Amino acid sequence: MTEKNTRTFIGAFVLGAVALLAVFVVLLGSGVLSGVKPTFVLYFNTSLKGLTQGSPVYFKGIRVGSVKSIQIRPDLETMQFATPVVIEIEKDKAIALSDGRDTDVFNNAEAIYRLIEKGLRARLSLTSILTGQLCVELDILANAAPVDLAALKPYRGSPQIPTQLSSLNAALDTLEGLPIQEVLYDMVGSIRSVSKQLQAMDVNRLMESIRSLSDEARLRLGELAGLKESTDAVLSAYAGLALSAKDDLHSTLTRAERTLARIDALTDVSAGTMTAMRESAGNASSLFRADSAVVVEFSQTMQALRKAAQALDNLAVLLELKPDALIFGRDKP
Picture 1: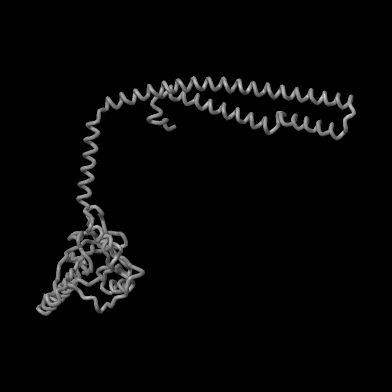
Picture 2 (picture 1 turned 120 degrees about the vertical axis):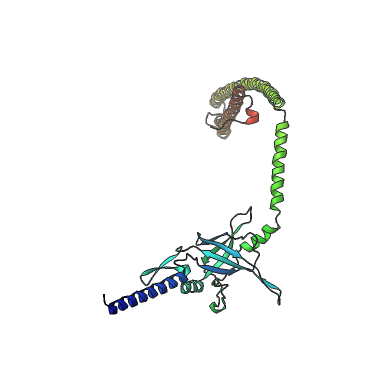
C-alpha cells in the first residue's frame, strides 16, 4: 500500500469515527441510549396529602408512569409556596405513527403541546378511601379551561402540563376531617364487645328455654286441635240444620201455594187479592231457591268457615312435626 493510499484510508477512518461519535451524542441526548424517561412538572393548587413519590400516573385509565419527586418552592418575598410535582413516564407507552415511523408521544414536545391545546390536563384521583392514597390522572378533558402555552414554564428541564381541579378536592377536604382511624378503632372495639357477650352467653340455658317454649307451644296446639274438631262439629250441625230448614220452608211454601189454589177455587175472592197473594208466595219461594242470593251467600260463609278450620288443622300438623317453627320459622323450599 502506497503512502497516499494509507493517508486516504486514515482520513476516511477518522471521518467515519467522527460521524459515529456525532450520532452517538445525538442518541445519548435524546435518551434513546441512556434510557432516560420523559418527565413533566405539575402544579396543583390543593393539598397533596396522600400523594407520595412512586404514586402511579394513569393516562386513559392505563398506568403509564409514576411520581418522581414532590418539592416545595417558597417565594420569600410574597410568602407563597409552589409545589412542583415531577412525574416520570415510561418509554413507548403511547406510540403514534408520524411520517411513516413510530413516535413516542410523551417524548415529543410538539405532540404534547398539541394535546394540551386539545384539553390534556392532570388531575388528582383517590386510589384508596381507607388509606387516602392519591394518584395522578392524565386525560383529554372536553371542559378543560384554555391555557396560554407561552405561560407554561418548564421546571429543571421538565415541560409543564396544566392541571385542573376535580370534584375530588371537596371529597379530600371532607376526608381529612374524618377521624377514620378512630372510627376503625371503635368498630374493632364493638366487634370485640359483641364477641365477649356471645362467649359469656349460657347456650345450654338458652336451649332449655327454647325447649320449654316448644313444649308450651305443643300444648297450645293440642288445645287448638280440639277446638278445631269442636268447630267442625258445630259447623256441620249448623249446615245440616240450615239445609233442613231450607227444605222445610220450601215444602211449606209449596203446600201454601196449593192451599191458596184451593181457596181460590172455593171462594169468591177478588182476582187482584189472590194474584198478590200468589206473587208474595212466589217471592218467598224464590228467596230460598238453591240459586238464590241468600242461599249462595250462606253456602259461601260455610265454605269460608271450613277453610279456616282446615288452616288450623294444617298449623297443628306443622307444629307437631316441627315444634320450633314458631321461633325459627318454616324452612325455605
